[in-house]
Amino acid sequence: MAAIVTLLSIYFFAPWEAGLYYLRPLSSTLQQELDLFVEQGVDGVIVYVDKKGEEPAYYASGLDNRITQTPIRPNALFKIASIAKLYDAAAITKLVGEGKIVLDGYLSDYLPTISERIEHADNITVRMLVQHRSGIPNFTDHARYHWGELDVDIMDLVLDQPADFIPNADYAYSNSNYLLLQKIITEVTGAPHGQYIKQTLLAPLGLSNTFFSVQDVSKDRLVSGYHVGYEDDLRHLDHGYLSTAKEVSIFLRALNEGTFFSDEEKQMYTSLYEYDHTGWVLGYQSIARYHEQEDMVVIQFVNTTGNDIVILTGILYDRVMQILRSM
Image 1 (cartoon, rainbow, N blue to C red):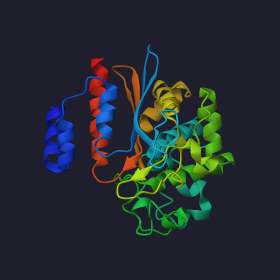
Image 2: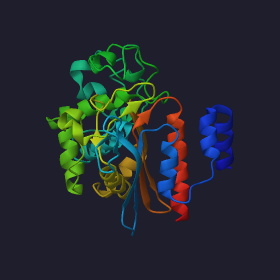
Image 3: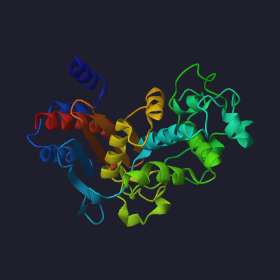
């Protein structure tokens, strides 16, 4: 039934190019499938597979950089976009476990200096922020926000905005929630939020190639990102967390296995947020999922956005999974 629904959705709603790609016979190998995907107008793609009991494997196709025409580097840094929310939600869970945050404590309790400029701050809980039930508008939907021009103070797009709905009355995905959660982490720990995540989640896993800004690394370590219709390399834009496919995979497996949680924290996180995520920022698309039946983590990075590539990226992931399950 799921396959029929997917097929009908693509037939009726997706651009015809995506439909044609979906209907192409499945490649006999994962490498051939990635090569076929790049032929759809994508610069490059990385897939990392970690199946329990087997050696993890990289697969890649396409270009790292249009100017140098160098092949994409499977172990290069990539902007992981909203996959970062998994790290933030895990950090909040740890802070609750340490008694430094209360899930049902209010936004106004933790950020009193700005709470008067956020509607309903006295009734928005930390739990609502994590679960996108705060009603705070998404700053990336603001008329003044532009993915390619970051000369505006993001907080100016969050503060003094009318709420979308009464807290906990509805659900609406909002990047503003997680910007505020990062500020809460900073407030209660007395250090930048990334420092807490690094010490509590990354260091115990031996992860040293996960960063919180493009300012933290040299540009040449980062895969170039492109948007259809523009020749500019977009890797200089600061869109948050960076990591490698391998390190995202290690983190995701640890999150699903509860490696850095106590039993109580693991139960808390299960009731609080997701165990996998997708990500999109200008020039970069990502998917990070754990597949319980196969005990397998599959990470997919694509360094091109625009047109129907977001649809093609989802189709590719489904095709990658079909191939992996047949191996």
